[in-house]
Amino acid sequence: MQIPRPVHHEVTKLTKIHERLFVQDRFVSLRGLRAFVIHRICLISWLLLIAPAQESRAGETIDRVLALVAGQLITLTDVTAARDLGLVSADAAADPVRAVLSKLIDRELILAEA
Image (tube, rainbow, N blue to C red; front, side):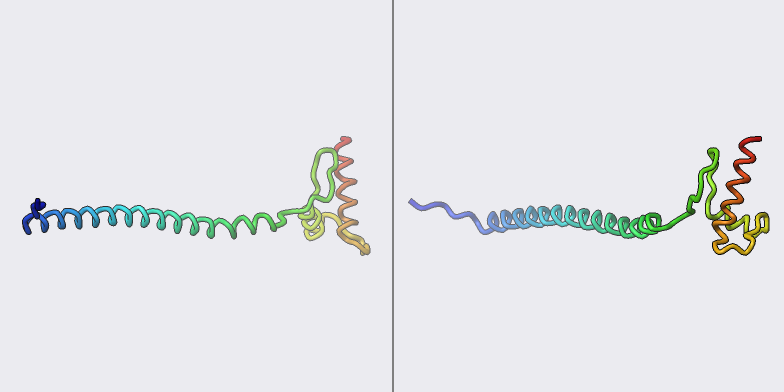
């Protein structure tokens, strides 16, 4: 008993169908892979853009609090501004920042009592 062999025309047709399905499978796989790669590239780019901003915020000193008097903060910027504008003199002290800070603390205490 012999198995009937398919006609050449049917073999070619089946082969073409299998090739088309194979190509479609590969295309779908490649499309998914491409989407994955693009997503990862976007994520890495975003992280690389954000990372320097986070580092600069973490290591950057905005201002130093030197004293808290009657609920009012006195910062290094306040002391420097008072000294530079001539509002308070340092009187040739060894540590001019400390001298100006002391005068600003006295001024805040007087204002708090009034």
